[in-house]
Image 1: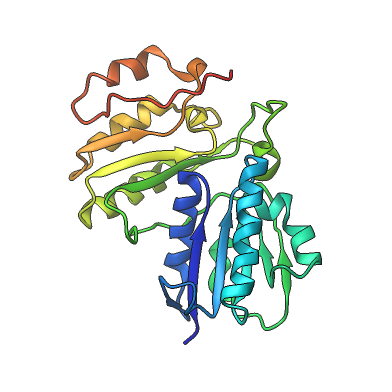
Image 2: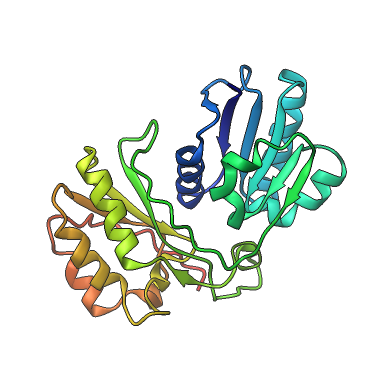
Length: 250
């Protein structure tokens, strides 16, 4: 059985996406040693030039340390730099965000592949374990509608779209039953959750807090304009972490 190593760059959303891919591996063995891997999936970040440079440096390093390993580029960098890296034969394959749930099938290909997919996909995978983590990341939405002039992320993650509430509740319930008590809600633009289906972050938080085993909930980066009175009231709750990562650019 071929061994697969995952290298994750960037944000908590990427860390969740890596767990999605790990949970889909059926015909491969997960390894924690890049030197022993037959295939290396690089879940990349492209939010800054420095992030792009780190990914390129890692790929170049793998070609020296484990030249027989097939490198597959995933993550945001697949949408911004994947075409050029594939054309230059720096990677064996490229997969976009919508293709990661197909990882088990994708990795079985014997010839180089470029499967970028679309930017409208929402994952349906329920992750039941977070390998090597004491806290569980829960992705509640994907994409961003702000379109800030300095930010590439909307063009590589797509427009804002929320995960289904029932899927999020099921996800947290499964992980709580497996011993996780602390959860970090994450996404491309977490504060936009629910705007596309008449819900809100506060409404979701109230339901999550009622799940047995949930002891603490933390929130990823928020924009100041997304913090309403209903949400602020929840900061008084004992299960809510009284710390917010607030982006000041907007």
